[in-house]
Structures are given as C-alpha cells and as structure tokens.
Amino acid sequence: MHNNFLAVVFALVSAATMAGGTVWRHRIMRDGSSVLRSMRRPAWWGSMGLAFTAYGFQAAALAFGTLLVVQPILALSLMLTLVFSAWAERRHMKTAEAFWAIVLTASVAGVVVFGRPVPGERDPATWEWVTVVGVGAVVSIAACAIASRRRANSRALIYGIICGAMFGFQAVFSKVAVDDFVAGGVAGLIMSWQLWAMLVAATAGTIVQQYAFAAGNLATSLPASKIVEPLLAFSLSLTLLGESFRDQSVFGYVLVGSSVSVMLISAAFLTRVSIK
Image (tube, rainbow, N blue to C red; front, side, top):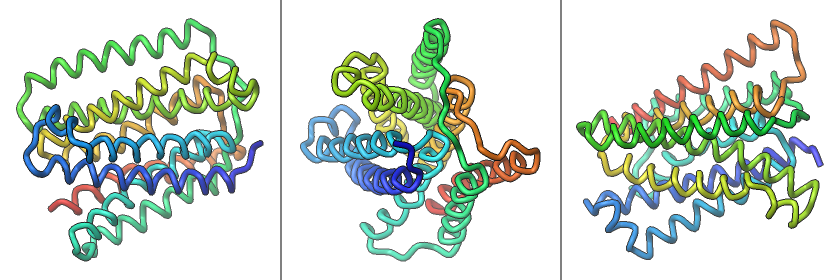
C-alpha cells in the first residue's frame, strides 16, 4: 500500500483541516473565556470535531506513507493556520508572512524530495515502548505541574512544548495503529494498544493547546509546539520504528538535515512575524 503521492494528498487535507480547527478554537478563546468555560460551548466541540477529522486524514496518510513523509507535510498546517486566520479577520498577509510561508513550503518539499523516505520494518520491543511512553508521560505531567505555577510567558512556553510532544507521540502511535489495521483489519486495529494511546495523546494535546492559548502569548507557545512535534516524531520514527531515507550518502543527509533545519527555523519565524 506504500504510495507517497496518496500520503502527501491525505496529509495536505489533514493539515488544512487541522488549521481550520486551530483558528476556530483560538477565536473561541479570544473572548476571554476560561478553558473550562470554553469546553462547555457547542462551538468548541465543533472545533474538536474538525481536529479529530484531521487526525483521521492523518491516519489515512500514514496508511500510504511513512512518518518521515507525512510529518513534514503536516508542518504546513502552521502556514495554513495563518492564511485562514487572515481570511477570518479579513486582512492581507504581511510580506514577511508570505516570505516565510514560501520558505517553509520549500523546506518541506526538500525533506520529501531529497530524502525519499522508505518504510521501517522494525518491531520495537515491549521494554522500548514502556520506556518511551513512561518517560514521556512522567515528563509531561511534571511539566504541567511546573507550568501551573509559572507566569504567563513561561506557562505558554511550557504548555507549547508539552502540546508539541503530545502531538509527536500521537503521530507515532497513529503510524503503528494504521499499520496494524492494514495487516489485521478492524480486529487488528482494535487490539492495537497504540490506537487507544493515539486517542489519549490527541485529546490531551488538544486540551493542553487550549491552556497554551489561554496563557495569551502565541509568540511563545505556537513556535515551541511546531518545533517540538516534528523533532520528536522524526526521532522516534528513525530510532523506534526503523524508518529511513533512501539516499544514505553524506551529501543526502546534509540536504535532508538542512531542509529540516530550515523547516523548523521558518516555522518559528513565521509564527513570530504573524503576530507582531
């Protein structure tokens, strides 16, 4: 079922749907409502519906491609979020926004074209999953406890990092759950513990994102989230799942590494210039 074209198409649809849900949730938070109060509003649940629809398209993309293909495409959700936000606010994008959006798009293409990712065939041992998930859970819980005692900017930064980590884990769990579905059908999917871990990570990440929005400093929280998510997903896809790049030459790794670096830098700058 490996088909990079279909993986890219579904990932683009996921990124667009994710962006729409993010803009909707952020606009809900702009009226000054608390996180818990916002969660009681039907509009918030509608935005959550969009978020889980985006996860569904992401799962479809992962059925046809690797995390190393899908995750860079999902990074375009940041650019699309800013485009949708400008449209909702009836304003034009700034020149700097357009520039960094183009750089982000080019760098994402560079990761896919230069790297030509191939699927992994590694079956992680139980102790590896327990270690990775356990460390992630403990660190996230501790970070949330620390964030609750910090001032707004520090709180936004910490919540942004946690949010990115949650979505990074969610991407890895999604890949394994989708592979189990492809191999064993519905029964294989239901029996996959990664399916339920994916749902928990996606829900937790979305809720933490609300707290990051409520902290009131998107210049801090959003770049942190968009940088941590692909870094964690890339790291786990390479080390845990055994995915790799077809071009194993030094020059190939330099090109891919440069593209990833530019992608992360452009994501950070794109967010900052958009909210000045």
